[in-house]
Image 1: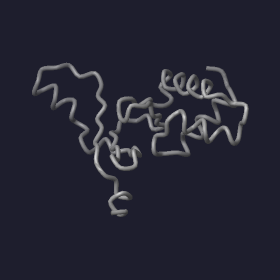
Image 2: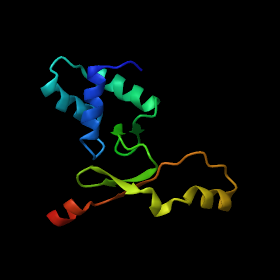
Image 3: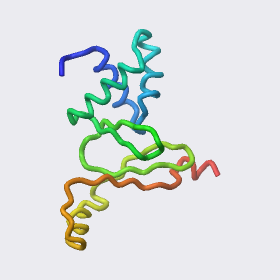
Length: 126
C-alpha cells in the first residue's frame, strides 16, 4: 500500500477514537480538517487497512461496521444504551479456543467475542 496523506489522517483519527468508530464518524471528523475527502475514500482506505491487518474491522455488533486500531487479541463490550464499544483484555479468557476445541472436537482457527450490557458511564447516569 502506497503512502497517502488521506490514509494517514484516517488512521490517526481512528487511533484517537478508542471507542471503535464507524466510517461515517471518521468521515465527519476528517471533513473538518480535509474538506475534499469523500466518504467513499474513507470506506476504501479503512477496508484496505483492515485487509492488510493494520486495523480490525468489527461487524455484527449494531448493524454497522466499526473499526479498531488495536490488532492484538482482545474482546469487545458493547453498551446497549450509548452503543460505544470498549476493549476487554484477552487475558480474561485467553484459553477459550483450547477449551472449546477440547470439549467439542472442533478445530478453532479464530474467534470474535462480544459482550453486551451497560457501560459504567451509562450506569452512573441512572
